[in-house]
Each structure stands twice: as structure tokens, then as C-alpha cells.
Image 1 (cartoon, rainbow, N blue to C red):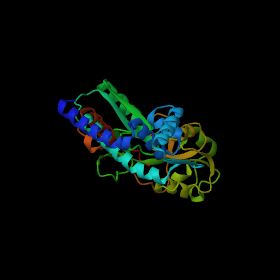
Image 2 (image 1 turned 135 degrees about the vertical axis):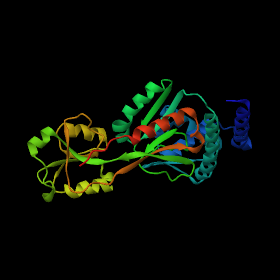
Image 3 (image 1 turned 90 degrees about the vertical axis):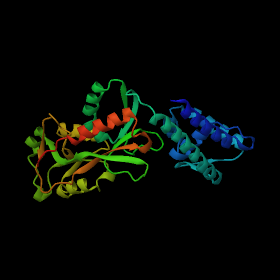
Image 4 (image 1 turned 30 degrees about the horizontal axis):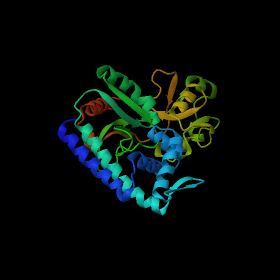
Length: 319
């Protein structure tokens, strides 16, 4: 980082220290960040994971901060910690400080011209396990000095808070400071193992798959259009398994536990058949997302461009 950028960072941080240390209260950023994470996540354990520290450390920092301030910022309830009236007032200012700190990090990262270092990439499990691993293996061979830190999370990590540098998502972002690029299309199909079909035969869709066994995701996803379509075809079938893990569902299909609606890219080379059915769920668009301040960082751009090319080439099977 050049001297101009370091000067800018020092000036901003100095201004933050002045605001933090008002009225004789000497507060460190670690203390404020502890309060922020507990307020945001609701529990000491989740906040500790977010900051990669021990839970006991989080508790000590929070207690010490409240003691110095002489005011209660968080109240513990059966549902977790919630901010008090004083905590709400502090939270708004701490989030402003966090945003300035992250802006500094983005300025620094945006000037990093090396094709090396780490990239934090986040996506949902089905894309991580069924789509990205072969692509990232190829990427690593071309860029051996770039390490991809892949986080699989059903709740999208916040790119603005630098919990990730890049995301692969199935919907466009609503935040104006994120840049999205449509990266390809995924299609779904109904799958069963050859052994399952030998045992149970092919489903009779006119009878809503009576006498068959189906595998479903968690209940929250069943209302999605593709799973609503699958449910309309199988409402006379027995639900053999529900799981919040697409990898678990895929293994259950291969183990002949039942039939399931899966991404068409799931079973390459496996002894699994795609079953024809009336109609077809709509295809799903994929988007590569980065923060606007990071989009020209060479290693970020390298991975973004690589993903764009490989994701658009993902084959879709015909019914």
C-alpha cells in the first residue's frame, strides 16, 4: 500500500479514536466490536465464532465495557441478547464506525495488484458441493498462489461487512454497492437410483406417485416454485427423509432411499437416472457478486472471470 493510502487510513482511524474516546472513556475497537457482534448475532457463542475468539473472551469484554460505561447495553432474554434503549443509541454509532473501518479495508484491498493471497467466497451448500469444487480445482492449477476460502452458508454472508469478498447466489442483490454478473443457468430434474427403480418401478404421475418414497429439503424451501411443482406430482408419496443438506439428499438418492428433485449437475457419473415428468420447473439464474470497491482487484477479477466462463458452460440435461 502506498504512502498516500496509509495516510488516508491513519487519518480516518485517528478520527474514529477521537470519537470512541470521548468524555474520558477509553474504549478500544475490540470492545465496540464485541458489543456489535453480540447485538447482531444474539448470543455470545455466535458472536465469538464471527470474531474467531473464545466465548469466555466475549463475555469478559462485554462485561468490562458495560462496567466502564456504567450502563447496561444488552439484556439477556430466553431468545438471546437484545439491545437496551442505551444499547440502541450506541449501536447506531458503532455501525457507523464499522462502515468506515470496512471502507478503509476496501481502499487497501482495491489497490492490491498481486495475483496471490486469499479470496473469501460464499455460496449455498448445493452450489458449493455440486458446482464449485471442480471449477475451483481447475482455478487453483492456473493460479496456485491464490487461496479460495469457501464458506457454505444458507444465509448469505454480508459482502458489505467483509464477511466475504465474493458470493455466488441464485438471485440479484438489492444493495446498490454490490456489482452482480449473471453467470449461468441451473436446471432441476427428478432423480432416482437404478436400484430404486428396479424395486419400486417408475412413478405413476397421474396417481401422484402413490407407493413411492420421496426425499425433501427443509420445510422452508418446499414453497419455492421448483419444489411446489415436485410436491404437486408426489403428494400421494411417502416422505422418507427431509434434510437441510443437499449433499445428504444426493447420498440418499444414490443409496436408493427415494426419489428427489435435484440440480441436473448433481449426479455426474453416478448410477442414477433422470425420470421424465409432466412439465418442468423453471431454470434458475446464478449471479457472481462482489463489492463495488473490490471489483478491479486482480485476484478478485481473475476468480470472477473464471467463474463466469465455467458456470456458463454447465450442461443442462433434457427431460
